[in-house]
Image (cartoon, rainbow, N blue to C red; front, side, top):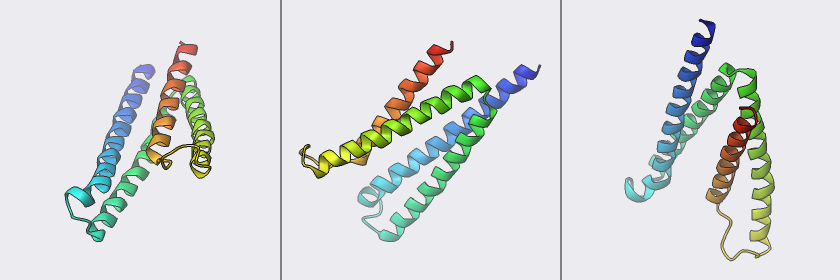
Length: 135
């Protein structure tokens, strides 16, 4: 009975995290593309969209903390290991990418989107490897 309740807590926390992530993602798209396609560079609307995006981002962080808190010890270890790897890859990779831009080793400017993709992919790979290792 206790296991079923724990599974329900995990499902609820996962759904809550998914909702906050979608809200954050949608608000990021609005903050990014709204000035060009919806409100014609109106600074006040852009500030509002960015503030909403920041608030949804804080909600997503809170939901992630709540999600991790209901996981069992092994799931927490896998999640935190993956997050640690993603953080390390992001810092080392991001700074290397920035230095390549500063030193003109790459022809274009370093874009934050590439860093976000690097962090996301490294997190997903580390999560899959961790789950496979402990399966």
